[in-house]
Length: 408
Length: 135
Ligand SMILES: Cc1ncc(COP(=O)(O)O)c(C=O)c1O
Ligand code: FES
Figure (tube, chains in turn orange, blue):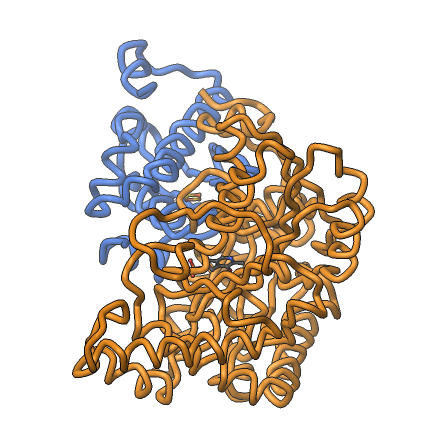
């Protein structure tokens, strides 16, 4: 059976060149970069070189790059590190309602520690309004964190504008660029950010390694305590192979970006148009044009996302959904809800994210099979395309909703 | 994640649709929670001779719906009222813990369909048996 991997926002397949570059550092070049003998110096040199490469691509200085154990760790480090170091100056943080949980839950943790937070809303296309950010700033605001692009619906945020606002008010600005790095241009000076998170496995690198850019002079505490690695800003023996892999993957992605971005965007538009043409009662989530090259996100009314995914899986298509039933929680995706989608529609979400290994044939394969699956599930659904989500009740979810004619 | 039986019922659901001239219909769940099940039954004498379902929900919701229609056919109303959510899950070789939410639907919908039938007929079953079905 054909496998069509269209979940590139979840993770990507490491490129063979990346794996090859990493291999020596998983084997014979095993030295600890903090030691002084030959194999250690070799590891140190490779690490330094990787740092230079990453910095150059970001438009940063090598000393501004902190390697971490994941994108999640980079986000945690930026938010908690800046918040705790600047607490005297300000204890208020601004972020958006559609951030990844690595950011959202970091901010929520800070709230438990007495910080205050504002979650700026988004519009129906998943866009933050810079004016909302500015209006939220107080004289106690220490940090703003707004993602570069959203991982579920792909909307690309007006980072440059928000950065200007942050600068004007003397507030640190962090952006989570995990979904954009390697896919669209990311230059810390052009964006105007003080801190930026990235993660290797989203651009054909290895899992379990990320990086945080922290502009020189940004006051921050370290998040992971221990040894003096990463200029005392992130303790722990470096994942040398992982970092080599990250740098190699980023180098390759940057070199091919212009071409890949256009190619993948074309596949994306082919898929979006194909689905909209073939299937009724479907909504495109996110911004129609300001969206990630590979992101396709829909809500199919009257059906539920997990059953869609299971059917796609049986045909070899790997996708994802923000439905509650997929995540195992009772609430569907916070991103879709923040965009104002009703719960019942958000349950029918499907995210297909294209990448460098996808072809037109992949898109056509999905287009060939998806309409049938949707039709089959709709035939099974008590909600026709005519009927609305009407009269039903749920004993379990009384507080989540106001059920009509409550069950026992 | 799902047992083979669940996947079997999910892939080839039994008894999809609505029974023509149904004698009882039960609808439970809430689209806001992500799962709704509508079950219709045909009753002959005191026996359920046909049952069909329509479900909006995840793999487990569809599989439990399909299974309950199989379990209930040929049963008397009293026996049907004793089919519990747990029994439906067990008949499917179990469900993942976070999916037990959905398995509640199938038996609830069945019981509601029976109530609907009894209400229409203005009939009642012996008190003792009804209580057993409340579980
Ligand atoms: C926007 C965003 N931020 C952070 C992360 C977390 O990155 P990682 O998987 O490296 O921890 C992800 C990936 O899941 C993401 O999409
Ligand atoms: S329908 Fe929601 S968990 Fe099954």
